[in-house]
Image 1 (cartoon, rainbow, N blue to C red):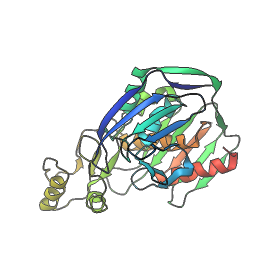
Image 2 (cartoon, one colour):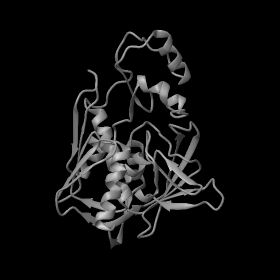
Image 3 (cartoon, rainbow, N blue to C red):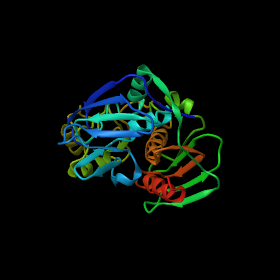
Image 4 (tube, rainbow, N blue to C red):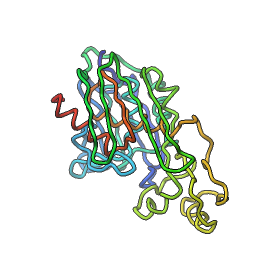
Length: 299
């Protein structure tokens, strides 16, 4: 496969999921061997670094990269779209320490990339070829099995306690199916997590338009009212369990975990040829596995 960049620049703007800031992200064509470069135009000197696993500094509710004053978070949806569409070189300008969350999926990024067009370049794209079965157990409890395959393939299995979000499986055997089968899947969280996340200064920009909120453990109505008021959302009936917004797919949570997995594997800095099977994955485990592969294959 040849290296590729976008044909023309495009801009996406919206609020940050965790900061609540209004953020402008500009995606620009880049020369061969640039990689996926993220520039903070709001910082002195406009520092820029490639999106690589070596810069991972945090993984709670999203993947965070940092180097000195340069810090960017919630990048996995944009990276997932770029990776799946074969974009190997692109410069992304951000005016805040976070990527805009948009609708909580990768679809806005996919749509913008396809509208901008994809430009093939002369150089060959670097590739990591999985030449044997590799198993990795992350400290977080996530487990990974990588096997040889003729193309990039990803499979995710998730399991959460409770009746609403039972065991789910999602797989992608051809990246060409990503736009239709994976990109729509939104980030998700549980109502029971919201108080904790808000207390940690997270999800300041969260709402029912950019996340799939799952309500599976009853709470008092006054507590539900407090949460929806804090999020600036319409009040919900606390006696009605379920998803607080309609599902795009029956297994949308698993598909979103697959979307995140692909975004985190973009931090290899190259294509992967092989099948990645992930059980109960999270950003911490994903990026640990990527770092291990980086060491094993000297990427």
